[in-house]
Length: 67
Image (tube, rainbow, N blue to C red):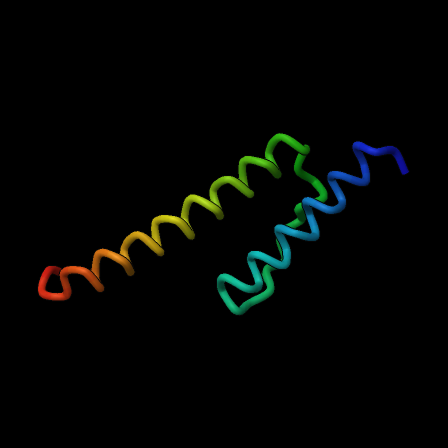
């Protein structure tokens, strides 16, 4: 297995675990069909969504009267 294939495999495993953790469900998305750049973009999307969720939680804690 080449280093690029190994990196892609680790990224696919990370994405599957992150999707399962974030949603509590397993999705039958064929992540292996995506290229490495698309997988990294999906990883970035998941991180951005988590950041937005945390920011919303923090805003709700600071100003609970605003919804």
